[in-house]
Amino acid sequence: MDMSELRHLESVLRGELRFNEPMARHVTWRAGGAAARAYVPADLDDLAAFLRATRIDEPLLFAGLGSNLLVRDGGFDGTVVFLHAVLGRLTLSEDGLVYAEAGVASPKVARFAANHDLAGAEFLAGIPGTVGGALAMNAGCHGGETWAIVDRVLMLDRHGKLRERRAEDFEIGYRHVGLREASDELFAAAWFRLPAGEGAASRGRIRELLEKRIASQPLQLPNAGSVFRNPPGDHAARLIEAAGLKGLQVGGARVSEKHANFIVNPERRATAADIEMLIERVQEVVCGKFGVELVREVRIVGEKA
Image (cartoon, rainbow, N blue to C red):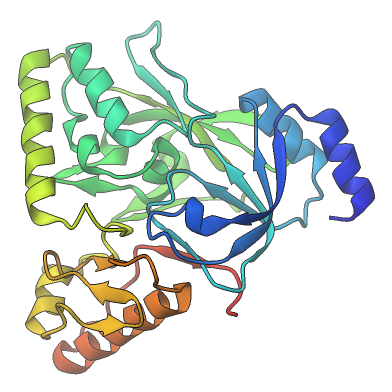
């Protein structure tokens, strides 16, 4: 963007435009470079106006809680759009569906459903991200997957146009979701269809899942959740542990001793390069020992320093 474009944006939008935004503040690894620009929209209408006002070739990165993201140390030469706590509407629709905008934290949806005596969303309590991220990667845990409970979604394209889509418009798989037709749309919201349940039982199940998560994952240390997808018929954590990689360290980044599919930044001194090199090292060793190519679940963007 040049200065005239920036002045135009600031004159027509209601949100906050920032420059050289340190992304380590916004990703759960607490590492990485800065974004050239960042935008915090005022609401969904303002986000649509932002998309209409920006050039179609402007690199955009949409961020929620930052639990599945790493920005390389050289930074992101584009605009990061922060959705968490902005697209935060969570309600029951007239037809009894749970409507959640993309910036709503997934665990909040689980609690909301339980408090309205709806069952089937309890697994969302174990997903450390937002609805937008859960939709984009078909996030799941404890036997549940996001798209199994989606009735329809609200999409927003680069021209600021909203449209509803249903599951048949997408190719949906394990930790993968893609539109069947070429498109530059992003998830703005979703309607979740859930069966009637018993609130107390659902809340008990949520507590049980959270206790299990606390006991098995290094949540007290900066991390990005599961780093690798589980290969067919196996678990990434089992392979990494069997390869003797628990505790392996590169710079300030370390493979967690508590859960091998987590990489932690225990002293908050890891660079994005440390984390990326450790990811690559784990992939190399596991492939060498077992012939299995681990696929990253986390997204890495930006330029190397």
